[in-house]
Length: 440
Image (cartoon, one colour):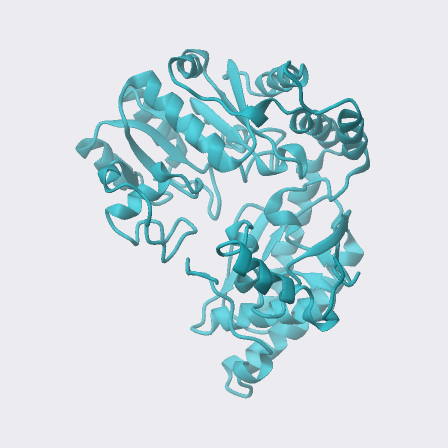
């Protein structure tokens, strides 16, 4: 495919894709309107290390790394070799791949509390599988959630109760269109570190499962996770930790190992295959065995590449101690954000575990400021906004230039706060879109 309009940075094809596929066919968090409307490159030709090349071969440093899929960097050589070998030998057949068994053993070995595993290809699938297993196990159906857990009916049904329920779980403005209204009052949200809110839900409803992220923006306070573990055990509720995002970032395995609280089921995705689709559901033997009571099956769950990529990814993570490296880098980034905010006297809110951290301005113009930062980063060859998904390829030289660009941005933002500049004059595009809206 030849690029007809080289100045478009791929947006001509994005506009075309929305006419062929509703909203485009990408992950919501990758939509260009969420970064820099009309200017974001959108499509890529090549990725290597922490670099991405757009359709006209312009090279960018990627600070977002596929929204967290590639801790080892893009096209990691050892992972590539394993995958290419698997492709040459055939990735599918009437028989299964032995690597699925090998991967199950590896994951159970690093999580002593678990006894069995199941596999899928996406985070949404894995979450749905975990919920199905929990419901099959205790013959109950109501769920309490805290976090983002995918696109399936069971999850979105909480917005049938109130369309603002998912506002604090990464999906503001979402209307539950297409979700059967009979699912109303089957799923309930609670806020992180608000144990009393969850306790009240359990008093009113006989829950099958508590599905939650171990930590996303904040660390647990006042023994939050331990209280939930105790509550779940007491009321015979299946505790599910969704570690699709947090897994393998601060520990070799789940983040729950860091906080020393074991779930009944844990889910891993994103970074497990270093860019190749693979997700895992591991859990206690007596609960996971309930999978045999229900129909849980898919043709491509036995495809070989995901397992091969995951096994090699785990080897390379061990080799480089990747979780230690990205945690150190992330902490350095957070320190520098704090330094720049003090230097320019800006009120900055910094959140997230080290390897997936972000910041926000305590200002009514926050969205415009973040759009401006994205604009200036892009102009200087960086794919970046107010978040960073750290990979082991983010070295000191890359970060040095990143801080330099950010310093200049903060300087102008301070001028805007002091009314010496107008942010509208600095922006070359509309502000980014964070709410859930139609984008075609």
